[in-house]
Length: 357
Image 1 (cartoon, helix red, strand yellow):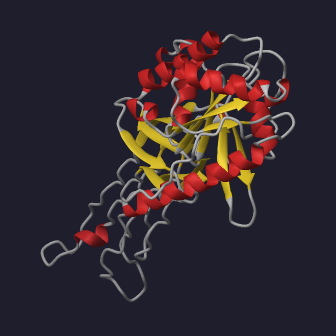
Image 2 (cartoon, one colour; image 1 turned 180 degrees about the vertical axis):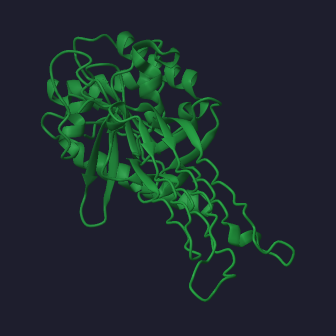
């Protein structure tokens, strides 16, 4: 199924049922009086976050969702049946906007979370409601009100703890395959990944996190080049970024440094919040270099980048260094969670050691 992260839909709530004009007619009761019942309320439309859906592709097929109309009232003071609500499942992480005004209506993050997007019409009143001491035989009733109709723009931002970013062909998909059960496409040419991929990294009982592989970014991504805006938005919910760099020995130090600076510039151009978010440097394809050439090259590249944050050396193809990276990521995520709950940071910095993989 093709990944879709935006869709426009129309939702129509049900109309309220009309009230009834009726009089009681029974033998030996000549003055039965009014007994017309109210109509039923129209059904409303709700969006429901579903953890089992990860794309908005279905909304490219079905674009209109309607709730049921309320039934009209009837005699013998019978109230019309209310219309059934319409529940529309959407992926967890969906932002809901009013399509015409751009107003943000809600953000569905937690599976099972509901958002009412169209209110059902109110029921009409039967003539029984208008009975009074001066109007004993009312012949008036009211019609039900129309249900609300809206055009909505749905925008999906993936829910992931960790985001992989880097230039095309840096080995992000191979790394995701190595740490999780996800199976993104892997090939020896750039732009193999055409849409974001999610994988669950499990380190044991109750020790797991979600990692997202974001398609390779290019210069100008923050301005929309190469669908960059649609890819960058999926990093906004992540708590930690892993910048994957190809440890190809044929590439010059200046070209590697330029690539890292390009990613940094695109993050800063898209969102200052992304630019200052926790970001670690992950040198991939370590199997291409033997020791001690590997350590020397990592040290030289780190120096050329003026990088002061955590550095990891891994090989997505052989699995070397993967365990240490995942354990460090999990520890950092736990520390960030404690920080967000208490407001006090107790996250220890991970020391840089370019010789350790």
